[in-house]
Length: 251
Image (tube, rainbow, N blue to C red; front, side):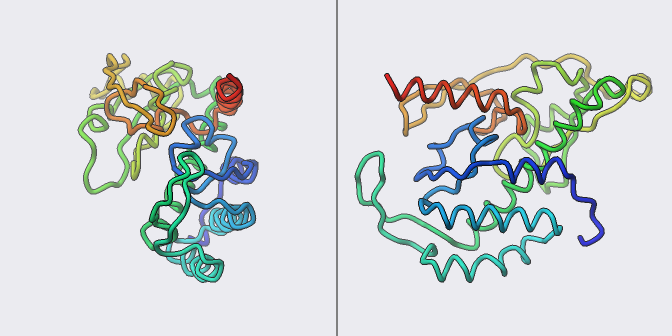
């Protein structure tokens, strides 16, 4: 991956995040991830900052997961953030046996941050080039198996400012490799002639999901994992979410 061109927007997105500890992955939620860097159960600020730096280096140097893990795992083991441990949940004050570092968790940390950073960088470029390339096309990624709903979204072509992209801009769940491609009006016309393109956002169906950390009930679009129905890189919505949470906590 040494010859890969690293998108500067993705790098800036990852670097700009402020570290924010959280015991549970539901403690930092949806748009908050656009402004906050967190790893569930990593409560020490210095360790959290070092992991963020390791991810930044991995993105900048085009490291594979194996290279990233080989570099970070010894540090986490040395700092004691590895394996199962007994921890107190700051919210409930309960003592719980929890999984800290593991090879599987490192893979999740790497993949989630790489994909969301790249998605955020792409969104910044989409906004910048919207005048000449006003359309986005939903495409499937290289996964071996795809979610049925994601397969039904393949070929959806909508203006970049269509509200559908606010919740369906990929990735749309844990492990999702879907993507969008930004195209010009001329290419949009060519694709329409070829067929297989959907030019209307499908009607959205929702499921109710309760965040057991807050008790809040959310309506999550079908096909999207809870917590993923937001657009990486949308910093204004991140600020709005932070203000809303501060107001809720003050009540």
